Length: 115
Length: 112
Image: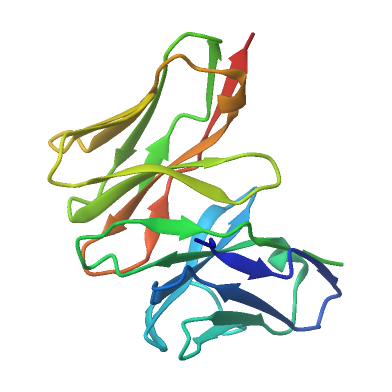
């Protein structure tokens, strides 16, 4: 079956712009989580959506937001981009880690460069 | 608090076994994961273990979990040059859904 699909794979923006990233989870998965990966901070949790509701949120400013649609696809948005937002943004999908199924799969990521 | 620690580098010879270690602090973890990341790629799920287990084997991979010491290890048997990558340990916390806490990653270098 198809894996987690993230678009776009690469993008370049300038400071002050905004960006929207998309994630399509594995069919049947209802949980989508987002992570930011940078060389300095490593992998950090942004937020998780389950059944169209934000279930958990990391320690990022309000410029970072997300949503989930009824088909479980998710988008994240970063407004007023800063140089420090340059990172690999990873999306992960799972059925629900609160159940007995612990499988959590990642996409290939969207690499954002802010100039 | 939530913290996951890994050593940063490991170098082995092709054909040897590799053991990558990880320690975590939160005792309410439910699942513990090992992911592999190759340059320019996303995270590939290698294996995971439920917190009430102490061992899991999957082909060349063996995961050992010591809950008392909060220590997790990944053993790769017969390590190949294609195993060269960064390996991340991560834990999920009971009740926090899809939020994983990651270690810094261990860069495994396999020399022929």
